[in-house]
Each structure stands twice: as structure tokens, then as C-alpha cells.
Length: 178
Image (tube, rainbow, N blue to C red):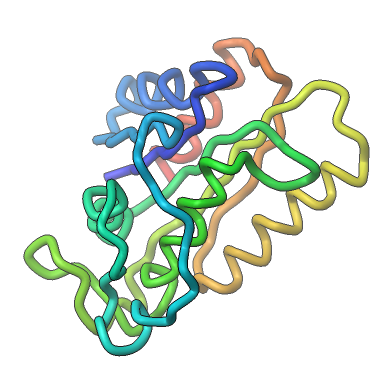
């Protein structure tokens, strides 16, 4: 399964990627981060300590985290904001810390210890017109650092704000058949 989490507030690229990946034969779950109630990470450390992979904050991430933990590919889609991602996607990234911890896996829909070696691929799709080289480099670096922290493979894509369907189809094919 592929999980796509997008900030659809500046376009419908996440929905377009979901449809294209579905046409490519992939099973896809899509979340529009800008419509979810997700609180910022409290940096309490419980997810990697006393609550063993469970976030103590109760909000919509409780439905998102098990899907992320059980997927073979995670795709985050956002406008590029100062070389990073939108605040909606940033909250998701911060709150998925337990998923990146190699001590957890999914069992019966719950995060439990032992996730190392899951084999998930991690992708980021950034959009923006007139991005400078500094912003482009920062976005690519952010992806690479997160990919390294999660000990996974993947790729980052940078697109114009309104990419044509062929570009979307190519990315979906790559993700669906990696």
C-alpha cells in the first residue's frame, strides 16, 4: 500500500498522484493534511519511551500513523516553503517520529516494537514556481536527512505548481513500481 499525505490547500496534486498511482495498479490511501486536526508534536519523548510507539496526543494522527507504519511507500506532498514544507506537512513529519524509530512495527493495526527492516520507501514531492537554488537545495537536503534518519530508500521531486499529467503519471509509475 502507498500512503500519500498532501497539503491540498494550494492545489490537488496529492489527489492527482493518488489517481495516477491507482491507474498504475497500486493500492493507495490518501490524507489531505490541511483537512485533518493534527496538533504539533509536544516533544515529550513518550513515543520512543513509556508509550512504545504511541503518541500521547489524541487527534487525527491516530488514524494516520498506523497507515504510515504499514505502508510500503510514503509520499509527502507540499508546496516548498522557505526550502521546507507547509506547516500542515511539518506537523505530520514531526508526529511520525515513532514510525521512523526502528524499534517499532505494525501488528494488528497497532504500532509495536520491532519495526526495523520494514522496507518502506520515502518520497517527497515539492511544488513551487520561481524556486531559487537555495530553496531547492534545502528541500532536497530535508528529504535526504529524513530518509537517512528513517533508514529507508526514496527520492524527492521538485515540480512547478501546476505540473502536467505526464509528469504526475511518471512519478506515480516510479512510486508504484519501485
